[in-house]
Image 1 (cartoon, helix red, strand yellow):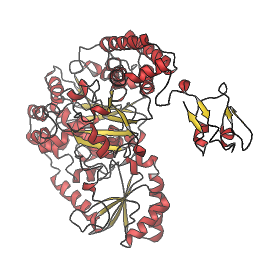
Image 2: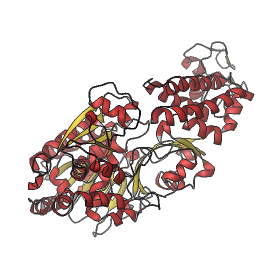
Image 3: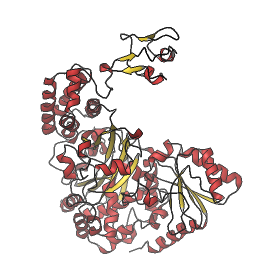
Length: 617
């Protein structure tokens, strides 16, 4: 059997040799690009070229600090790695000039990583940064470090070592047993034990079997899988190849949403390079094992995140779920035994094989092992990716890693698990994040999206939004989901408009339980979760909409009433000039009034007023 050991030593030597030169690393994941990373690259590379400087420029994926993008790292030989953030091209060039002179730009410095070198004064160590102190880096260990388009970078950091170990010294049974012993559970939904899935496919009769990756990340506010695909695509490939070997498959599919063009581009490059390196294709590393991977681009249907709908889509059929059993392990893609896991699940596999099942099982809780990647979004100060050990509290994630609520407003809830999850209130912030605890609260782990909400959020409106999303994404095959979510949405819209009744709450609750227990697939079964969770924890807000005809958060427009306080109004006419409905009247330097019949309740006038004269009721 061929070995990558010599290549790994050489690739590691080449990577380390980069340390003898000045390096500039710019994050070009989707978050970095959206924040201006490409312009940063153009500006900095243009300056380096114009000055004829001997500087190596490297692009990388997301390091997790999305809140500070675009990011630029500067590595000087014999000095700490310094990360600068919130840059534009002009500032980045000035930061580089100053850094080359031995001076750090403290106002833009995010953190430094000394790694044995003398620390630079007044810059926080990366390991001590509150965003990172409670994190563990396993799945995201290489993201933001290596160039995802360079397979030699991946191999230099122990890439494909787990594949070598599997093919050279482990039987299929031992590989599956290692996954079982690790306690790894699916990271894309309900948390089914991964090893049990693999064992079922391995034992299924038949010569042809498939390995499928669900990369159809459709939850609003979720971007965990995308960041792995963009920042470390070979980790997914290696995990899928190991799975193929373990279950007896020679072919795999990555089902990735077409809205992830950068991820698809990097996956295609990774597959080509892996085939050229001999770790993918025929006779992998001379072992006699064959495995090929294809990419199937989805059209953005949320329901195709459900495994049977996903397989229908790969087959060229309409993406609608089917009744189970039979389960995919028995009859999946084209009727053959099929293993389906998501990106993060497969990306954990190489680490487990390389470091051992006990290493992985040593993290987390008794029933929820390992680490989990979460996407922090919403009203939190530090948005981004956080990989934490299972069992950490929601409080630690939101207030320690996330830095708390923007503008120091009051925390209200966190939506966990996407539109299929639940809203967790302040009194339950100390709940440990594991599969069992979240289910007890009426939520679920899901893929790992965390949307943080503050006091300015209307929980009824939030639920209306998520249910509208689920209702629109329903495939319409089964009546409970198709009709039930529609009726639930109508009730919520009625309540948000101030036309609801207490009978509506009873109907909403009973209908939610019917839809949850009778729908065909996970979309319908979990769509009522936000409704039930908010009725459980935020029932007073529903009652305020119904009884007092008031939205406590001031969000539901039909329940708002904008008035001008005549004692504060200076008659500056600014509100009148910005009103899109021409609903404000009054003479200059005299108090104005709002015509309630014309008012659109958009709040533009309130935002424009410099004297706080416009109040919202």
